[in-house]
Structures are given as structure tokens and as C-alpha cells.
Image 1: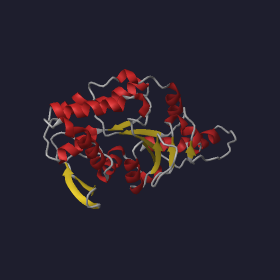
Image 2: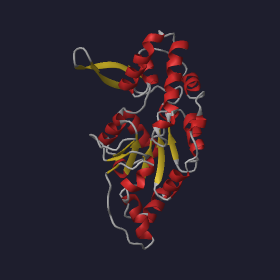
Image 3: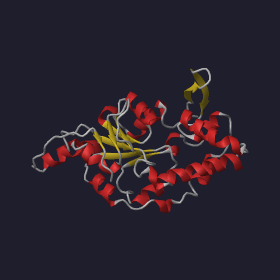
Image 4: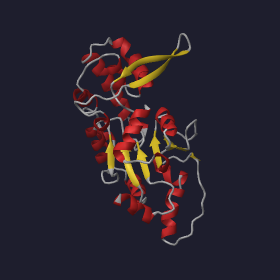
Length: 276
């Protein structure tokens, strides 16, 4: 409670008490190539570790990601049993993290905002920590909600009910439930809110996935779609790059300027086409 009061005193007129951030393809661009390498590792895991026929893997991998938010959650829903740590070690532990470089611009932007900042990622803790270290953002976030947070060992979690779409019948179908809790499912958001003591209607959520954004909107969060310049359903703001945050959301800095006695013209940018 002391933390909350501290921020309320610093920015008493701020609409938001918390900024909630995804990590991959949000804090760094898709063009880095890291996500493509991650997909390669997932497909290799499916072939080498799970014995799935190589020719079926690309389509299966894409469909499971589409249906369940992560291929891992989809594989578990289909009945594949494997060690989660082994999966993360194979998929993330071999990534070329050197693709990521320190981002002093983003670090300065985040530090200039006296608003609580929290990470909310489907990835495992080690991956999140390494990404933040490579970007030089380790000291920018107060808390991290990740795979281990949502899926603690030796604890049964409520399964995520999934509705898919049959391309043949053109009808919605109920898919097998997954024991993995992850975005874009509402139970993942609700659990994150509880763990990080987040008030949804006072929180701004940043993510590159439109499905995650749309679920976030349903839970009461205000939303920022990163990596796109055009807004879609459920999207409050769209940023082509996370570096454009100040141009698209100047109101986040408004109370900071007022507290220093400076004049500030309120000009809210909903969409931005600037590339950083």
C-alpha cells in the first residue's frame, strides 16, 4: 500500500497506476529475428522430443499457437506429456540472444515515467530475465508475471477452456482444454491481476498480440497494440514501435510536467506511423 500511495502523491492526476508490458516482440521489434529462431526451436522440439512427423509440424505448430496462445499449451491440450523446464531449455535456452542490443532510448522513456511497471509474459522466467538484461532494462520493472508465476510446479491449475474454428464446417468448435495457464485466456489475466495487485481499469496494457489485447480489453484494461500503426477492435492505442510511446500517449507525461510547474498542451495521439 505504501508503494501505491507514493505514486499517487507523485502523479495525483494520472489516469493509470500501472503499466503492464508483454516482452517478446513488444519491448523489442519482430524484425530482431529472435521470434523466428524461437519458432525453429519449437518445431525442432516437436520432431526430436515428441516424435511428431516433420511434414506435419509447421501447420500444427501454427494452428496450436492460433488456438491456444502458445504452442506449448496446445501440445499439452492434445495430450503430449513433457517436462516444462526441458521444453523451455530447448526452445529458449538455445536462442541467439546476441540479436538483442541495449536500448537506452526505451530505458530513458520508462525511467521518465513515475508509474509502476510490471512484466506479463507467457515465457519462462529465465528467458524474460535474459531479454531484459540484453536490452538493459533490468531495473525498469517492479514485478514480473511469467510462466512459472501462472503455472507453479506441483499445483493443479484450472484448465483453459478453448473455442476454435472449423475451417471445413465454418463453425465454432470446442477444443480440448489445456492445463497450461497463459495469455490470451482470461484466467491468466485474472491470476496476474491478483498476483501483482493490479487494478484493471487503472492499468494500461502493452502487447503485440491482437488476441491478448482483445482479452485484456474484456477484463477492463486499456490497451496498446505494439508493432502496428492501425487500431483494431479492442485496441485503444496502436504503436508501430514501443519507442513511439511518448508520441502516442503524451498524457502519461502530462502530470509529470504539471508537477514541475511546466505548461503542457494536451494532444493525444491514438495512432502513430513514426518508425523508430
